Image (tube, rainbow, N blue to C red):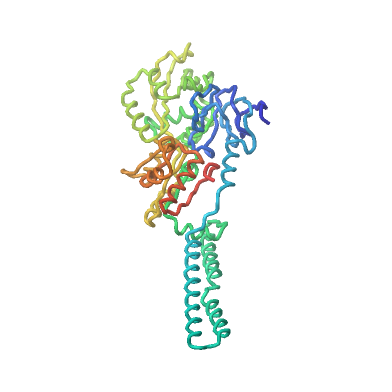
Length: 446
């Protein structure tokens, strides 16, 4: 209930919306709720901005999200339908049912046929009276003709055809809950898709390294506590280069460490190997580079290049000595290299996007993640091209319905969006006369 104190630790799911009061390197996976590719580091400081976006409220833990690192404590501020997830559920309950394009056409055709039948029967009845035929007989004849002219079997035929479509899609592992959805999907002119977990794998992966791969892999293994998705990604990459990781850990015995700290943005471990001490360091490039003795100009250019492609960049260094360093933050390290990480696209996405474009369907990405990350993924899979527009919710939130309908015409990527604004985007496309399909795997896509 509201006011309860809740303790949070790695592996737990957040049971309610919680205002954090005390944390220790708390990191939460909010990808299903907000679309963030990376785990979110939390803090307890007050957020002064009014109407802050959910992705900016780092002092909150949201119901249904998962703790992936650290510990924390906080006060429950919302439960049940009052939570952020609950508000999304409420929004779904008030959505009105819209007729599919086929249903709209059938209604229009039925009206035309009905009016035509009534007109023809009325003409026949009047002409028959003029000719002096019996009124009662001609009335029955006119009614019979009107009934015969109406295609009573049309709904049954349409249902059978849609059922055949359902069977075909079932063979391709697509489950259809409502028959009209088959026809609607066939008429779709725009497909709006979430990014994280739908277009991408929702798994952090090392996609690029700068430096000697084997030396970096050794550092990935040793300067690692496997306490976050980022460290798991480093370890998975290293296992491909050095399969026998257990023997490496045993050979390089760890004698001390400085755990990763979100303020220092560094982790340091010291190991003993062949009567020598080796100190490894990893962290943000802007923090680690000042501690390096070697020329880092080339590495800085590599960081700029990786960052321009929305990769999360980490730097790595080492220091060898015969005795433990008195202060690991005051020595000069040798820069070993860099790595760039990304939540990579699914292998099948490239062909799916190409098929949509060949069929005249426009794929659009709507995500809660950062704009530069969304654009980088969009370019790589073919959704975003030069000349296309991309916007954040903040840029479009002040527009009225008419302006928003105009703004979405040339836009292929919408970033930092909330579930409420996703509905507005879909409505804007529909006002432009487009049939919209929506796909995603998170609560915020429902």
